[in-house]
Length: 354
Image (cartoon, rainbow, N blue to C red; front, side, top):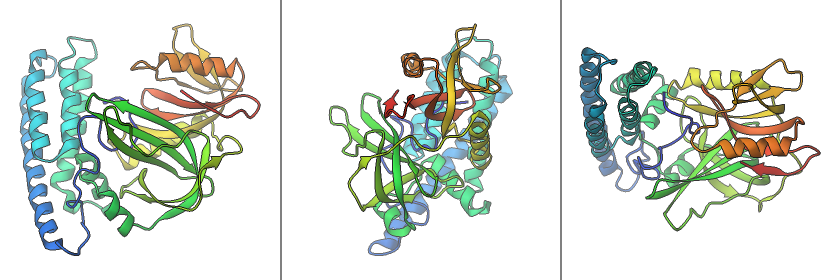
C-alpha cells in the first residue's frame, strides 16, 4: 500500500496538475460552451476507461507470472504504463501505477510480494470501480472519479456546491517540492462543525503558492468540499474576516478515537492512505526498539509514530516540545501509524509545526 499522504488527497506531487479535468469534471456545469464541455468529458471518460482496461490486462499478466518472481527490471515497463495513464488523462491511475513500479523495483525484500499484492488489489479495485462507475452509489462514484484524477476546477466547485461556513482553525501547513511543482497542503478544522478540511494550492518551483495560513490562526470563511464518500479536500470561498490568532488548541480525542476515525474513513474510501486526527493528551514515548509511540496519559493505549521519509527530526522536535508531559498532536493517521504535523505544548502555548 502507498505511503501516507493526506488523506484525500488529491494528486501526488508530480502526477497531476492542479484541478485536473477543469471543464471535464463529473457532471460539469452547463452554460456557454456546455455542449463542447460535455463532449470533452465524454472523450476523456472513454480514454480513462481504455486506460483502466489496459491496466487490468497488465495486472493479469503480472499475477499469471507470479508476484514472487516478478523481475525488478520490470520497473521501466510499469513506468511506461504510468506515462500512458497520464496520456489517458488519468493522473490518479498513473500515481498508483508508479507506486506499484516502485515496489516492483525495490529488490527482493521479504515483504515485496505482499506489498505488490496490496498495490495490485488497490489498483484492480479502482479500475473496476471506474469501469462500473455508473452503477455505483453517487458518493462512491464521486470518490472513484476523484481517485482516477477527475476533479472539478475551483470556480465550478464554488459555483455549484453548497458552502460550509465556519471558524476554521489552521492545524498545519506543509509544502512538497517534486522538482517541478510545489504543492501546498493546509489542514483546517471547523470550530462549530468539527469538520476537517484540506486545501491544496500549487506554484512553480521558486515561487511558492499564494495561499498561505500559519498554523494556529482562525478565519471565518466558506469552504466548498469536493464530492466524495468521505469529503475532505475543499476550495476556499468567501472570507468573512481576516485570520486571527486562535485562543488555544483544537478539541482532541484519544488514541482509540483516532484509530476509529481512520477506520470509518477507510470504510468509505478504500484507497484512502491517511486521515487527519487531533490526539490528546498524549505523550511521545521511545520504545526499546528505537521506534516512537504516542501513548495516552494512563499508558493503556498507544499508536506508532510513522517517521518515514526524513520525518525523524520532527519526532525528536515533538519529544522536545513535550518534555515528557502530555501534549496535543495533530497528524495524519494511516495504517503505519500517525505522521505528526503539529503539536500544542504544555501550558497552552501556541502550535509548533513539525
